[in-house]
Image (tube, rainbow, N blue to C red; front, side):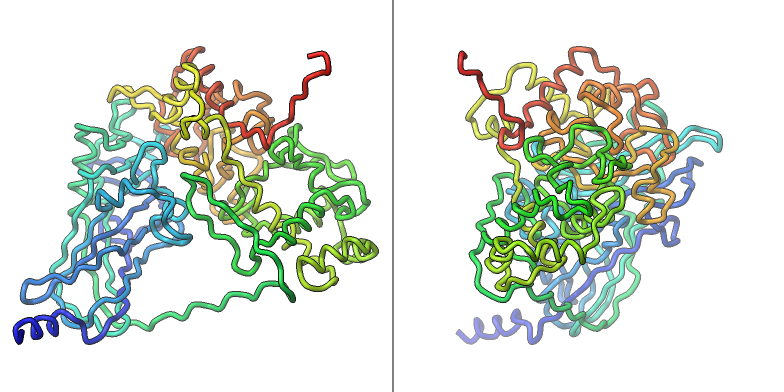
Length: 580
């Protein structure tokens, strides 16, 4: 018994600390911002890095006696473009250590588990990391993408390296003496020049991409290089951060909670803490969505440009505002907004309420004066009752209008298409639809025997959108700067938010400016109409100049599959005549 007691005292920590791993991307020893400027490999090729994202797990700390302190169940994601370069670890025993281990990747049971179980904000929530392969199964462990050119005058092309599958987990080990005491930060470097040192990129020979298929030598080569690209920088004591307090909800009385249900296969959304969904708030928002008094001249409501029966979209390329002026962009459909991290084609609005307020006050759209809207709505006794039910008082404010609209729009969930029903085993897709789905989820990589349409890179997973911003080659130089209007970065020129393809058959015309009237035109664009813009997404830039070369039958199959994504609750109702 004495031996057992002594052993327990040895393994139980006297104190537990927070340990932060910070990762600095580098190129040849120098700090590297992503998206990067031009860098040159040892082979003399000029590159630009546009994406570095990776998952970290199985962190362990080595003791001088050879033992390991493992931290199971703790995961991290690094994403250089967004500046997320820290992995937070909790409950680390204080003490002296001589080494650290981590894995770029995930244990097999976690890799193949249900991604919908991870809470909002968790590193393994697909909305956080953007690395889950959807129906492909499992996560991408390391995504490295960019542009390249063989000579100073060469045309820009893309490369897309996705290391995945259980055999591609990358163990990394450091030998270094350090102390963990209270809050501690360990700084590491990941040198991409070492990862790409032996890469010899050439057009259309398979060197521009890997998706870690069985027997893919390039994936194995990159994984080995990535293992050798990590460096220890330092360990230091730090000050623990204090999380800011959340704003209190705008409510003065009781209300009935809305039962928000996450559909099977969907990730957990981050619903706003300061605007919890209630039955009364949603009802008020639904009423306000069709309220023409939200416009300056009392002629237009939100529903005027976002028709519920068209998945909350418009049937025209550019909607006209309350005073007849045409807008500059196509009206986006409004469903599954609970899973979106930002709103508008350029992502300029962080919350639904912000986008709603912008539409009301925009002089080309509803052109309303907020104070006047409040006065007009205040004359309606029944509306006052609705505000009382939702917020506990009859006071009408522009803030409450936005909150109510946000509550309503966050409940517009679309997850009951023919495709969804086929996944549930309720219906079977036709042979043509199945062929379209196969093209949709298969990369274009004829060197490795794969000839697909590569749609899943941007439109994969249950949401059919990666929620990112992409330049999809509509123009060599876009007249609308898109995301660059928000970030003021040249690398974001002509980038627009990836729209969901759910209900796409009823949300045309398509693209940010509504230039394509039909799905056939959209498919034709991606097959052979992509223009090599400077900011073209690497997953498109790696395709041949002549395009994918899909046959007429293959393009028709893609369109047939896209039509299976229509949810009857968000589509025009077809009524039979009395004689039928």
